[in-house]
Image (cartoon, rainbow, N blue to C red; front, side, top):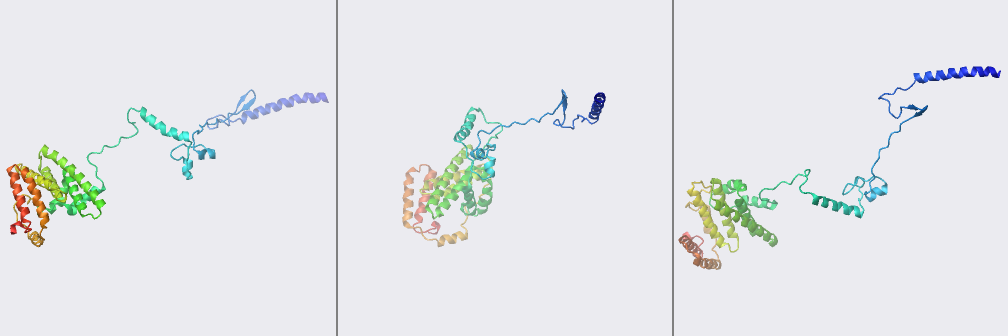
Length: 343
Protein backbone atom coordinates (compact mmCIF):
# COMPACT_ATOMS: atom_id res chain seq x y z
CA UNK A 1 0.00 0.00 0.00
CA UNK A 2 2.84 2.34 0.88
CA UNK A 3 4.54 1.59 -2.39
CA UNK A 4 1.38 2.45 -4.31
CA UNK A 5 1.12 5.86 -2.59
CA UNK A 6 4.73 6.67 -3.28
CA UNK A 7 4.28 5.99 -6.95
CA UNK A 8 1.19 8.24 -7.26
CA UNK A 9 2.57 11.25 -5.27
CA UNK A 10 5.24 12.44 -7.80
CA UNK A 11 2.68 12.44 -10.58
CA UNK A 12 0.26 14.63 -8.56
CA UNK A 13 3.00 17.02 -7.48
CA UNK A 14 4.26 17.43 -11.06
CA UNK A 15 0.77 18.12 -12.40
CA UNK A 16 -0.03 20.64 -9.65
CA UNK A 17 3.21 22.54 -10.12
CA UNK A 18 2.61 22.76 -13.87
CA UNK A 19 -0.92 24.03 -13.33
CA UNK A 20 0.29 26.75 -10.93
CA UNK A 21 2.92 27.93 -13.39
CA UNK A 22 0.35 28.22 -16.18
CA UNK A 23 -1.98 30.24 -13.93
CA UNK A 24 0.81 32.63 -12.97
CA UNK A 25 1.68 33.23 -16.64
CA UNK A 26 -1.95 33.92 -17.60
CA UNK A 27 -2.74 36.28 -14.70
CA UNK A 28 0.58 38.14 -14.37
CA UNK A 29 0.26 41.96 -14.06
CA UNK A 30 1.81 43.68 -17.06
CA UNK A 31 4.38 46.43 -16.31
CA UNK A 32 3.47 49.60 -18.13
CA UNK A 33 3.51 53.31 -17.52
CA UNK A 34 0.02 53.26 -15.93
CA UNK A 35 1.02 50.97 -13.07
CA UNK A 36 2.64 52.74 -10.09
CA UNK A 37 6.11 51.65 -9.16
CA UNK A 38 4.95 50.75 -5.70
CA UNK A 39 2.59 48.06 -7.14
CA UNK A 40 5.11 46.51 -9.57
CA UNK A 41 7.13 43.59 -8.38
CA UNK A 42 10.17 41.86 -9.69
CA UNK A 43 11.33 38.35 -8.90
CA UNK A 44 14.66 38.33 -7.20
CA UNK A 45 15.82 34.83 -6.43
CA UNK A 46 12.24 33.59 -6.15
CA UNK A 47 11.31 36.39 -3.67
CA UNK A 48 8.87 39.19 -4.66
CA UNK A 49 10.14 42.71 -3.62
CA UNK A 50 8.36 46.14 -3.74
CA UNK A 51 9.95 49.63 -4.04
CA UNK A 52 9.10 52.04 -1.20
CA UNK A 53 8.32 55.68 -1.94
CA UNK A 54 11.13 57.90 -0.76
CA UNK A 55 10.29 60.37 1.99
CA UNK A 56 10.92 64.01 1.22
CA UNK A 57 13.23 65.73 3.62
CA UNK A 58 12.59 69.14 5.21
CA UNK A 59 14.72 71.77 6.82
CA UNK A 60 14.17 72.40 10.46
CA UNK A 61 13.41 75.96 11.53
CA UNK A 62 16.04 76.68 14.16
CA UNK A 63 15.37 80.39 14.45
CA UNK A 64 11.60 80.38 14.93
CA UNK A 65 9.57 82.40 17.38
CA UNK A 66 8.62 81.23 20.85
CA UNK A 67 4.99 80.50 19.93
CA UNK A 68 5.94 78.17 17.05
CA UNK A 69 8.50 76.41 19.23
CA UNK A 70 5.89 75.94 21.94
CA UNK A 71 3.38 74.54 19.41
CA UNK A 72 6.11 72.32 17.85
CA UNK A 73 5.43 73.55 14.34
CA UNK A 74 7.73 74.96 11.68
CA UNK A 75 7.98 78.75 11.86
CA UNK A 76 7.92 80.74 8.61
CA UNK A 77 10.36 83.21 10.19
CA UNK A 78 8.83 86.21 8.43
CA UNK A 79 8.98 89.55 10.19
CA UNK A 80 7.61 91.36 12.13
CA UNK A 81 5.09 88.55 12.85
CA UNK A 82 5.13 85.05 11.39
CA UNK A 83 2.08 83.48 9.73
CA UNK A 84 1.14 81.41 12.79
CA UNK A 85 1.15 84.38 15.16
CA UNK A 86 -0.49 86.74 12.67
CA UNK A 87 -3.34 84.29 12.00
CA UNK A 88 -4.05 83.90 15.72
CA UNK A 89 -3.36 87.52 16.74
CA UNK A 90 -0.49 86.49 18.99
CA UNK A 91 2.49 88.57 20.01
CA UNK A 92 5.32 87.19 17.88
CA UNK A 93 8.45 87.23 20.06
CA UNK A 94 11.91 86.07 19.05
CA UNK A 95 15.04 85.17 20.96
CA UNK A 96 17.34 88.10 21.69
CA UNK A 97 20.20 86.78 19.56
CA UNK A 98 17.87 86.29 16.59
CA UNK A 99 16.60 89.89 16.83
CA UNK A 100 20.14 91.24 17.04
CA UNK A 101 21.21 89.19 14.06
CA UNK A 102 18.20 90.34 12.01
CA UNK A 103 19.13 93.97 12.68
CA UNK A 104 22.86 93.71 11.97
CA UNK A 105 22.83 91.54 8.85
CA UNK A 106 21.04 94.05 6.55
CA UNK A 107 23.39 96.85 7.56
CA UNK A 108 26.43 94.72 6.83
CA UNK A 109 24.98 93.65 3.50
CA UNK A 110 24.31 97.26 2.54
CA UNK A 111 27.84 98.22 3.52
CA UNK A 112 29.26 95.65 1.10
CA UNK A 113 27.20 96.95 -1.81
CA UNK A 114 28.89 99.34 -4.18
CA UNK A 115 25.70 100.61 -5.76
CA UNK A 116 21.92 100.41 -5.54
CA UNK A 117 20.41 96.98 -6.22
CA UNK A 118 18.74 96.38 -9.53
CA UNK A 119 15.55 95.05 -7.95
CA UNK A 120 14.84 98.25 -5.98
CA UNK A 121 13.75 101.17 -8.18
CA UNK A 122 15.37 104.51 -7.53
CA UNK A 123 13.28 107.22 -5.93
CA UNK A 124 12.03 109.83 -8.38
CA UNK A 125 13.90 113.10 -8.31
CA UNK A 126 11.59 115.96 -7.34
CA UNK A 127 12.07 118.95 -9.62
CA UNK A 128 11.38 122.43 -8.34
CA UNK A 129 10.03 123.57 -4.97
CA UNK A 130 7.63 121.49 -2.92
CA UNK A 131 4.58 123.28 -1.49
CA UNK A 132 2.40 122.12 1.40
CA UNK A 133 -1.29 122.39 2.17
CA UNK A 134 -0.85 125.74 3.90
CA UNK A 135 0.64 127.19 0.69
CA UNK A 136 -2.46 126.10 -1.24
CA UNK A 137 -4.56 127.91 1.36
CA UNK A 138 -2.47 131.06 0.87
CA UNK A 139 -2.81 130.78 -2.90
CA UNK A 140 -6.60 130.56 -2.65
CA UNK A 141 -6.70 133.47 -0.21
CA UNK A 142 -4.70 135.59 -2.66
CA UNK A 143 -7.22 134.94 -5.44
CA UNK A 144 -10.17 135.61 -3.13
CA UNK A 145 -9.16 138.85 -1.42
CA UNK A 146 -5.42 139.36 -0.86
CA UNK A 147 -4.45 140.42 -4.40
CA UNK A 148 -3.29 144.05 -4.84
CA UNK A 149 -6.14 146.44 -5.58
CA UNK A 150 -3.96 148.46 -7.89
CA UNK A 151 -4.00 149.27 -10.74
CA UNK A 152 -7.65 150.27 -10.62
CA UNK A 153 -9.96 148.00 -12.58
CA UNK A 154 -7.51 145.06 -12.74
CA UNK A 155 -9.42 142.61 -10.52
CA UNK A 156 -9.98 140.19 -13.40
CA UNK A 157 -6.27 140.21 -14.24
CA UNK A 158 -5.30 139.42 -10.65
CA UNK A 159 -7.88 136.64 -10.34
CA UNK A 160 -7.40 134.92 -13.70
CA UNK A 161 -4.42 135.89 -15.86
CA UNK A 162 -1.80 136.23 -13.11
CA UNK A 163 -2.61 132.94 -11.26
CA UNK A 164 -2.59 131.12 -14.61
CA UNK A 165 1.10 131.98 -15.24
CA UNK A 166 2.34 131.82 -11.63
CA UNK A 167 3.47 128.18 -11.87
CA UNK A 168 5.93 129.12 -14.64
CA UNK A 169 7.62 131.90 -12.64
CA UNK A 170 8.75 131.07 -9.11
CA UNK A 171 9.29 134.69 -8.05
CA UNK A 172 5.67 135.53 -8.89
CA UNK A 173 4.26 132.51 -7.04
CA UNK A 174 6.30 133.20 -3.90
CA UNK A 175 5.38 136.90 -4.03
CA UNK A 176 1.70 135.99 -4.15
CA UNK A 177 2.06 133.63 -1.19
CA UNK A 178 4.05 136.22 0.75
CA UNK A 179 1.39 138.91 0.37
CA UNK A 180 -1.40 136.47 1.27
CA UNK A 181 0.43 135.28 4.40
CA UNK A 182 1.08 138.86 5.55
CA UNK A 183 -2.58 139.77 5.16
CA UNK A 184 -3.72 136.71 7.12
CA UNK A 185 -1.14 137.42 9.84
CA UNK A 186 -2.42 141.00 10.12
CA UNK A 187 -6.00 139.78 10.57
CA UNK A 188 -5.26 136.77 12.82
CA UNK A 189 -6.31 137.35 16.48
CA UNK A 190 -4.24 134.47 17.85
CA UNK A 191 -0.69 135.76 18.44
CA UNK A 192 0.92 132.34 18.00
CA UNK A 193 -0.76 131.72 14.66
CA UNK A 194 -0.09 135.30 13.58
CA UNK A 195 3.62 134.92 14.32
CA UNK A 196 3.77 131.66 12.38
CA UNK A 197 2.08 133.30 9.39
CA UNK A 198 4.50 136.25 9.59
CA UNK A 199 7.46 133.87 9.46
CA UNK A 200 5.93 132.13 6.46
CA UNK A 201 5.40 135.49 4.76
CA UNK A 202 9.02 136.56 5.27
CA UNK A 203 10.27 133.19 4.01
CA UNK A 204 8.27 133.48 0.79
CA UNK A 205 9.28 137.14 0.42
CA UNK A 206 12.99 136.38 0.64
CA UNK A 207 12.63 133.58 -1.91
CA UNK A 208 10.63 135.81 -4.25
CA UNK A 209 13.17 138.66 -4.09
CA UNK A 210 16.07 136.29 -4.72
CA UNK A 211 14.44 134.72 -7.75
CA UNK A 212 13.25 138.10 -9.05
CA UNK A 213 16.77 139.54 -8.93
CA UNK A 214 18.06 136.60 -10.94
CA UNK A 215 15.31 137.02 -13.53
CA UNK A 216 15.87 140.78 -13.87
CA UNK A 217 19.61 140.26 -14.27
CA UNK A 218 19.00 137.72 -17.05
CA UNK A 219 16.81 140.22 -18.90
CA UNK A 220 13.21 140.47 -20.00
CA UNK A 221 12.61 137.82 -22.66
CA UNK A 222 8.92 137.91 -23.59
CA UNK A 223 5.49 139.33 -22.90
CA UNK A 224 4.55 136.74 -20.25
CA UNK A 225 7.77 137.14 -18.28
CA UNK A 226 7.41 140.94 -18.23
CA UNK A 227 3.90 140.78 -16.81
CA UNK A 228 5.01 138.15 -14.27
CA UNK A 229 7.81 140.47 -13.08
CA UNK A 230 5.42 143.40 -12.91
CA UNK A 231 2.87 141.42 -10.90
CA UNK A 232 5.59 140.20 -8.52
CA UNK A 233 6.77 143.80 -7.95
CA UNK A 234 3.20 144.94 -7.25
CA UNK A 235 2.66 142.07 -4.78
CA UNK A 236 5.91 142.76 -2.91
CA UNK A 237 5.11 146.48 -2.95
CA UNK A 238 1.74 145.92 -1.27
CA UNK A 239 3.28 143.52 1.22
CA UNK A 240 5.76 146.25 2.27
CA UNK A 241 2.84 148.22 3.69
CA UNK A 242 2.03 145.34 6.06
CA UNK A 243 5.61 145.00 7.32
CA UNK A 244 7.13 146.88 10.22
CA UNK A 245 9.61 149.52 9.00
CA UNK A 246 8.78 148.59 5.45
CA UNK A 247 9.05 152.13 4.03
CA UNK A 248 12.47 151.55 2.49
CA UNK A 249 11.35 148.38 0.77
CA UNK A 250 8.17 150.14 -0.32
CA UNK A 251 10.22 152.79 -2.15
CA UNK A 252 12.53 150.12 -3.56
CA UNK A 253 9.67 148.23 -5.18
CA UNK A 254 8.13 151.42 -6.51
CA UNK A 255 11.35 151.91 -8.42
CA UNK A 256 11.37 148.25 -9.45
CA UNK A 257 7.80 148.45 -10.74
CA UNK A 258 8.59 151.54 -12.80
CA UNK A 259 11.78 149.94 -14.16
CA UNK A 260 10.01 146.77 -15.31
CA UNK A 261 7.22 148.79 -16.88
CA UNK A 262 9.76 150.97 -18.72
CA UNK A 263 11.56 147.91 -20.08
CA UNK A 264 8.28 146.45 -21.31
CA UNK A 265 7.53 149.73 -23.08
CA UNK A 266 10.92 149.74 -24.76
CA UNK A 267 10.40 146.20 -26.08
CA UNK A 268 6.80 146.99 -27.02
CA UNK A 269 5.32 144.28 -24.82
CA UNK A 270 1.66 144.68 -23.92
CA UNK A 271 0.99 145.27 -20.23
CA UNK A 272 -1.93 143.32 -18.78
CA UNK A 273 -2.53 146.09 -16.25
CA UNK A 274 -3.84 148.62 -18.73
CA UNK A 275 -4.15 151.49 -16.23
CA UNK A 276 -0.86 150.89 -14.43
CA UNK A 277 1.06 153.79 -15.95
CA UNK A 278 -1.75 156.05 -17.13
CA UNK A 279 -3.18 159.18 -15.58
CA UNK A 280 -6.79 158.26 -14.90
CA UNK A 281 -9.48 159.92 -12.88
CA UNK A 282 -10.37 158.46 -9.50
CA UNK A 283 -13.56 156.39 -9.80
CA UNK A 284 -16.59 157.90 -8.15
CA UNK A 285 -16.95 155.00 -5.70
CA UNK A 286 -13.39 155.45 -4.40
CA UNK A 287 -13.78 159.23 -4.39
CA UNK A 288 -16.78 159.01 -2.08
CA UNK A 289 -14.95 156.65 0.26
CA UNK A 290 -11.96 158.97 0.48
CA UNK A 291 -14.20 161.92 1.33
CA UNK A 292 -15.94 159.97 4.09
CA UNK A 293 -12.69 158.57 5.55
CA UNK A 294 -11.48 160.07 8.86
CA UNK A 295 -8.28 162.05 9.08
CA UNK A 296 -5.04 160.29 9.90
CA UNK A 297 -3.89 160.78 13.47
CA UNK A 298 -1.44 163.71 13.62
CA UNK A 299 1.08 161.73 15.70
CA UNK A 300 1.36 159.08 12.98
CA UNK A 301 1.79 161.76 10.32
CA UNK A 302 4.62 163.43 12.25
CA UNK A 303 6.37 160.08 12.65
CA UNK A 304 6.09 159.54 8.90
CA UNK A 305 7.54 162.99 8.25
CA UNK A 306 10.47 162.28 10.61
CA UNK A 307 11.19 159.01 8.82
CA UNK A 308 11.16 160.76 5.44
CA UNK A 309 13.45 163.54 6.61
CA UNK A 310 16.01 160.94 7.71
CA UNK A 311 16.06 159.62 4.15
CA UNK A 312 16.79 163.03 2.63
CA UNK A 313 20.63 162.83 3.04
CA UNK A 314 20.61 159.54 1.12
CA UNK A 315 18.93 161.01 -1.95
CA UNK A 316 21.66 161.98 -4.45
CA UNK A 317 20.19 161.25 -7.87
CA UNK A 318 17.78 163.85 -9.30
CA UNK A 319 15.06 161.20 -9.58
CA UNK A 320 15.50 160.29 -5.90
CA UNK A 321 15.36 163.93 -4.86
CA UNK A 322 12.18 164.48 -6.86
CA UNK A 323 10.61 161.33 -5.36
CA UNK A 324 11.49 162.54 -1.87
CA UNK A 325 9.81 165.90 -2.49
CA UNK A 326 6.62 164.23 -3.70
CA UNK A 327 6.43 161.87 -0.72
CA UNK A 328 7.18 164.67 1.72
CA UNK A 329 4.44 166.80 0.20
CA UNK A 330 1.91 163.96 0.46
CA UNK A 331 2.84 163.32 4.10
CA UNK A 332 2.46 166.99 5.02
CA UNK A 333 -0.93 167.18 3.36
CA UNK A 334 -2.21 164.29 5.48
CA UNK A 335 -2.14 166.54 8.53
CA UNK A 336 -5.19 168.45 7.32
CA UNK A 337 -6.83 166.28 4.64
CA UNK A 338 -6.96 162.68 3.37
CA UNK A 339 -7.05 163.96 -0.24
CA UNK A 340 -4.14 166.26 -1.12
CA UNK A 341 -5.93 167.46 -4.27
CA UNK A 342 -8.84 168.71 -2.15
CA UNK A 343 -6.75 171.22 -0.20
